[in-house]
Image (tube, rainbow, N blue to C red):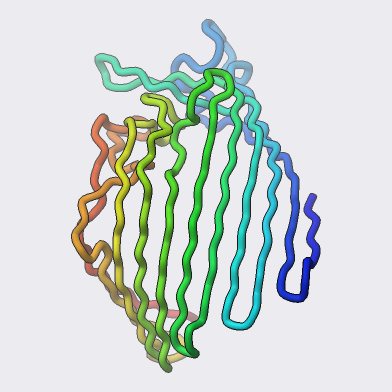
Length: 253
């Protein structure tokens, strides 16, 4: 259910509330040790997740400026939490239901400096708490800011992206979900990238760029590249790629 209204000629806002239930997937149902000890029926061991969430937000447009904000707060009953345990054959997982609180917000703006040049900025944050154990909810992304600049002239365009990610200290070691677990606190980083594109005709666009221009060594907090097997991350956080050159051809038909 969602309500929308105008605050003024340039500003509108919305308030929404929703409820969703998610049935456990195969890996959650049949993870070794899932649910109460001695449970013989996997469908009785793990309950579906139930999320009730409140969303609010607003949008502003005036001349060359656009801005928006959004925020949410929610309660998850029977959140499916994985606990990873080391053993002789690697890691095993136990899945169980807990209750959790989640919240987050995003703010962004876009400004057109000239007919050809524009800039965007966004800031996003997510937070979660395990209510049963009074500890952080694992696998939550850290605070992140993005700044982009785009220049367009005829069939040409060029852009720059500066991505800044804060350190994440709200972690719970060896707990997570079916595809990853917290490996401890992570460091913040900043990455700068460039790209350009040329529209050959209505059907074809050629683009190229360089990601991580300054060859920064960094690792994402939610790093799935270290998986030794599906749902079994390795013990070491794996760095992302260094300076990377790329090219692409888009064909629309």
